[in-house]
Image (tube, rainbow, N blue to C red; front, side, top):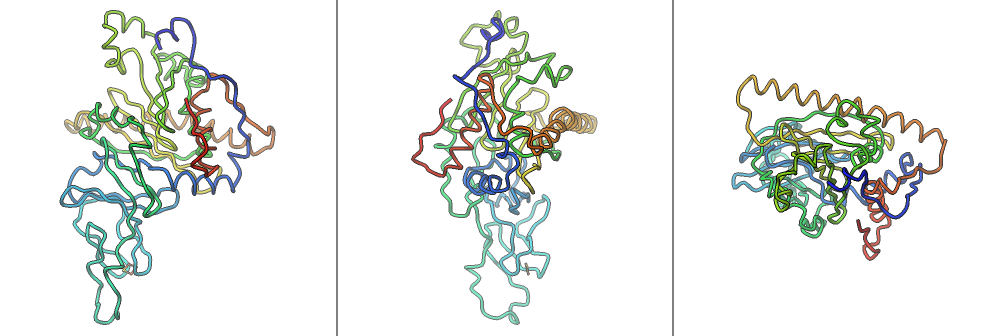
Length: 378
Ligand code: FES
């Protein structure tokens, strides 16, 4: 990264990559992405810090699937489809803390392990086998301060194979002991248009002249791949100055002091770790191909100190939400309109947009649905 800044270079691949415009507009491609990517890969759906105590739960919608995640008395985290086995109502709403879930429709109750424990006025209901009528469980694993879920029941989920050691980064950051500050929700264009914006710094000077560019030069990125996931290094203008007196073997400890990382989890998470406040964007496709819903989550190392601190944090979350929306998501909506106009058959990613190329190579790999096909390499 130091070399890139001093010599005005960036990470490059061997040639530009063309991506068909219809991959951002086409309903069949959109449906295939949900089935073959979002329902097959481990999705980071929650943080340890969001559900710190036994009994804590949260509900959410993930690509149209109602999901319930909870922590039981023993501290174990589970995920379920939030769908009652009686007649399909949700058994929980929002976030909260409880030891059992009661469906609001006819008050059937479920334990924190998802087992059906009570049928209201069961003497009148007739014979059913309660042991077969629990909530439908989803593969779920808590690791390095995050909760990963696969949206297909009984699907295999192998985080070590998927992340190839990348989660050690988060163990080193002690992410599990951070404080969850809150979240904001924004909507934008097709999920890949929005996600493409998180994967390169080629646009910093042009689109973010007053927010990002004063700290970080444009078009100066280093990419590392971990399976389909990425770590993007963005050096700061002042990297040479900041590393000047630091022995080389300690450069790795200087995140946010000379350079920053954006960590990308395929297919839909971007984490920007900053000292003041860390933003983690979760992008969900839908409900139609031209739209995404993004949850912007905010965390930091220190707990909230007092009322004034809470107020400052709320202000910071609003500020980051507004910058992300007005500077990145608004142009995404304009791009969507442009792509739907039929002006061009393809878009093109340059040799310098390595992260975008890598992301689209992996999207295509999953859509091929052939595990024996060679995996893209950084
Ligand atoms: Fe849940 Fe009837 S739908 S109790």
